[in-house]
Image 1 (tube, rainbow, N blue to C red):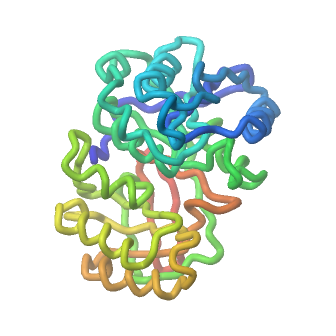
Image 2: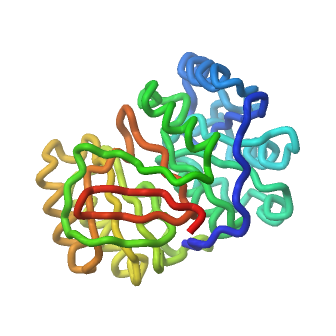
Length: 306
């Protein structure tokens, strides 16, 4: 994963336009309306991708065809009136559309904000590799996790992306103390493991890695971490900012033991149970910008100007 950022994104202001697109799974219409209403309450104008409520003709786990989803994402990014592109929800499917996006055109265009989480990790990785602009890992508007606290975290990241921000996580637990500095990279573990061997695969050299997942058994988490370790993805990481593992085996201690077994040998500052991932009140974490991780106090501080 390319941890460099070519051009910083602009801050959003009241009156700016955001586009909600479906890059992965089908979107619930009621959830979409509710999420859009929250964005409008911030003074933003909201546009919808043409297939944001679409359905694939044969595969019911996809929101429209790969080409249609890629076209919606691309058009939103290239529209000079759109200031941010936001993934409405996750699911599965973003990897399927990456090769259909004109990344050269996106790189030549005015820098645009992208926000999303879960399956959108594939797009975070692709944007980092092909465009080089920072992105925002955050709860998505058409999901059950987009509660008022998570929404406020996204609002702060959109309207003040350049300020120093301490991301609070009261339940954070130190696995290995120490302080790390570096650019933030990562996202959903399943999607990151699926990127191995792709054109977007880049080791997280020098980065503070963010990891989270949902609905995975501990042995599957072990397998995916082992895959990334063997592929060299963790080589040279600066620190590990590990988030939530919702519905992962029903026993948080089992997940904790897997994380300790697989990741502590890296010897870098490590903290887990940060408020990042699939749960209400999730933090909005900018990827591709610099941060400081104090694993001893469980503190992640975004420092984009350093």
